[in-house]
Amino acid sequence: MYEQIREDILFIILYSGVTFMAMLASCYLLLRRANAIAPDITPPLRLRRWTGAFLASIAMSHVWYMPIFFLSSCEDRKLCDLIGGLLDSMTFFPLAIVVLLTMLQDRRRPLWPVAVMMAPIIAGNAWNVVTRSYALLPILYVYYLLMCVGLILYMIRASKQYGCWLRNNYSDLEHKEVWQSIVVLAVVLLMFIIYALTNESHAYLYDMLVICTLLIGYILWRVETLSDLGMLVQPELSITVDGIAEEVVTTDKAADDGRPSSICSRSASSLGLSKNIGPLLKKHCEEPQLYLQYDISLAQLATLIGINRSYLSRHFASQGITYNAYINGLRIRHFVEIYREAVATHQPVTAQQLAYQSGFRNYNTFSAAFKRVMGMNTTEWMLTVK
Image 1 (tube, rainbow, N blue to C red):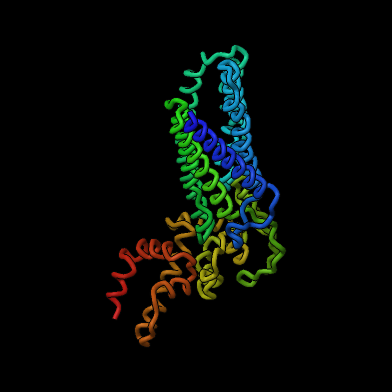
Image 2 (cartoon, helix red, strand yellow):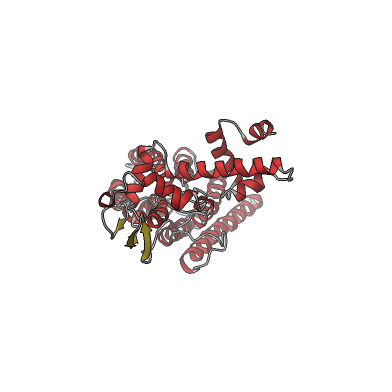
């Protein structure tokens, strides 16, 4: 008996610790402006707020289930469990979906479908509370499982589209990709499966605490290491294109709705840029080695050239490449040149050192880009250079 009491007390302490951890993480995201996890990264404010609300829902979920451990009446414990399920369906689950959708910054996705998806679950749980019965629970389990499977398929498709958008608009993808967000959805689904198929043993309860702890830590890290891709209105610039002075003002709303930016200038076609796009890129990007600048975006390059961003994007598409592939191709060519020079002058250099000098800030990204461009890995290629 004393062993059971000691184990119950230990579990309550751990349970309260996870609750406190979730609330602390929520307060950090909602109240602290600076990024303590990755100080050099500015995460999206909108995502921070939604994630703070989601973490708060985890903490509150622990709070409204806690009376179960102290109630002696089976009916009271059952009612507390039913009310907890209803409150979870109104907070935890919809907020988890909203966080996943908000991570995708290619456009501002509507959130009302989340309410529509959750409406049957909320209604079913409300009915269970009114009738104090688990009668609809099996049906709700099946519906929730199907909803999670559908959401996973949607996130896979949306993440692929988001990845294409990144490659078409950014030269560097570090701290921008969100395919890991599917992991969050998988964890939530795992929590549901454990909840649906496992009885309320201590092993089950400890498993849930471990999963919650991992989820809180992961989602906090993921949000704080994701760069905000929203762009402000660019200042007016005086740019000369083939002797024609243009004043350009660029507004990028890609982070909000995914549409191309607008440029308040003469139409690109009226300037005859369709035939001169190659020379313009050579003049404004390749010759001044603009590609060595870290994280230069398609919108910034378009502004420097003096043409519409979507027009420049279509140019790369017509060449069968993405903007990311174009910039990385120039960087790899630069790497090859400076490596050959180093070999010719017998300078002691490393591939990692030259990769950084070529505009890459992540060696793994460099290695993958090098293999795509050269058809072999860096070590194999370096052995061929004499």
